[in-house]
Length: 269
Ligand SMILES: C[S@@+](CC[C@H](N)C(=O)[O-])C[C@H]1O[C@@H](n2cnc3c(N)ncnc32)[C@H](O)[C@@H]1O
Image 1 (tube, protein in one colour):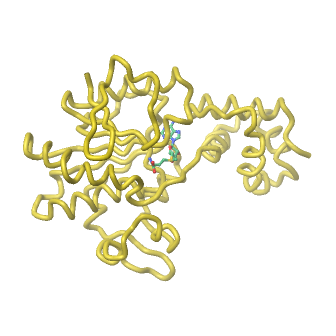
Image 2 (tube, helix red, strand yellow):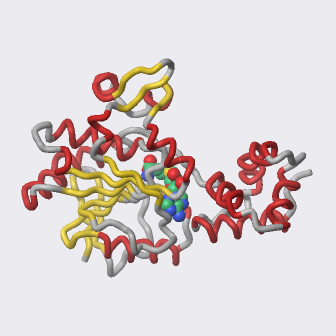
Image 3 (tube, protein in one colour):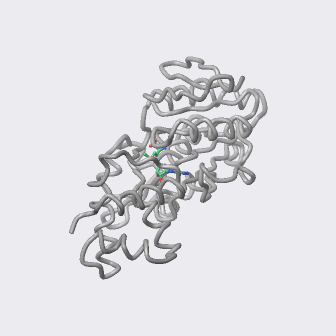
């Protein structure tokens, strides 16, 4: 039995309310494929039956898992290399020259490749600098994804995506078929569960925000709210980086665009 409109609409509303992601009309296939393993785990004969179970009563933990299962966690090491070039060549040296330290926030860090890339960059670019001079906060809304990020263990296929062999052996140790990040690059990372559509009361105050490849999943009004909140989190001379192809509506009056090397950075106004 495949998912009917009422069930799809229920899941669509749940995902939107819990994590802000707006599923399109054509995403019923995604609901089927992503929820199939959870339906099996719950002993349901179909995804439709599983959604019926959710609709019948308050299954809070299961609802969270459903929302998280429908997010896209695609990421890789040094994704968009031009960004890391600009950070290493311009942004970090400028910040460190000005105040001797910098705090970076990877605000939708997925399985951790982004904050680990930042940490490797800091270690390579400023080998003499004490670790606490460049701090990295790494957050995501997904419990499971964040747990994987904290473990910092990756399979060979994940390692092959974006990580040069010389850095692989320098910053990771082989453990069976996987690679474990060394303590040196983990020490400066602080992991947090953080929902971008929730309250920003506990949000950090930082110099650089990486908010990449996540705003695309939200509606215009949600994007604007998040950009406003990020503006408050950023130092006046701070930097916001979005994904390579992202040009969000909603930044006007808050940020201006500045080119650094081959990337566009958003600077607070
Ligand atoms: C496509 S990944 C991007 C990862 C990384 N920033 C990159 O560009 O490679 C999107 C991430 O956003 C997270 N996400 C989705 N909705 C979120 C929300 N409301 N708050 C925080 N993170 C969210 C997902 O869990 C997922 O890990």
